[in-house]
Length: 390
Image (tube, helix red, strand yellow):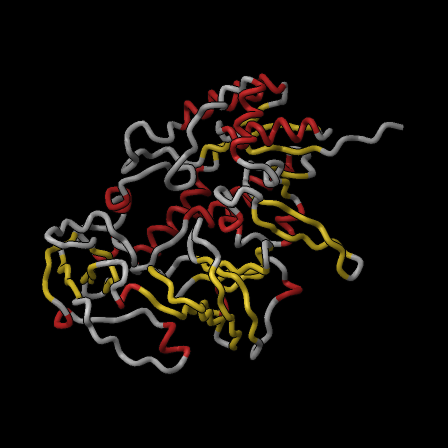
């Protein structure tokens, strides 16, 4: 008797990666169907011509027709606004810097969208992410490892740093072992309409945005002081881990007034663009923000002392282990490779687990550690856990 093929619903976005992923799944013998997600309607703050979802929908339909796979459409915009966009607004309002793409994956693609796929009878959901899943057996049960994509320039495992074992059990990443040029070549060979399409940029499903304009849908502009801190500023001595992990705090008297800004909640640590201050040999960077008093602090040059820290802290309630069997116990220390933003080279660090959370101490001070962002830690090429930076 012929075995019944496992069914996969692929999230077809209208891009080249998901198009080739759909083709590869079909080649591997899966019963493949496609589903296009519409997650955003509003164009406020989006840059003209970027991420036109109607065009993406048309291209996705053409790809599905060419690959001869059933096509479905689903509108998840209400869930996306609630779970991702409202979270963004709330974090920026607090003076933190969220990563909506991480939430989009854990709360939309591998939650709401996954459930819709399962309702269609899917055994798995497929995506065009550049990462790999490996299954091992522990205690007689399967355990799923999330590995970095084979293409070091496209590895997207960081964006999946909040997935659970249950979510990974249903996930397939058909192009994770490939290089981007190889994916493009398959699309060209098949003459897919996505073969030469540019990769999307900006916020997941929203597109490239003018962030202050986008945020002003809910956050009011409010003029405040832009204060430049001198390069020879003496930072306070910090001895304990708690002190070293805390963001720097300053007062306007620590520097000189360099201009005005439109609201401290529109700025993030390490930001270079949009400051509107000239007359410097090296670029200015945001080194601290004070939302309560509406002050933005900047410093000149990549090497400004206030721009870097060696320690960050992730509260216990914000720490997540993709591998629960590897979760650290209170009092334990381990060495991992850590990144605090997408595409940042992995950095050597020591993690210390305490009752209040996890402290990450880097071998080399890190530029632009921003509260609200995600730190993800790896054991070699396996992403094992993550935490939201306090």
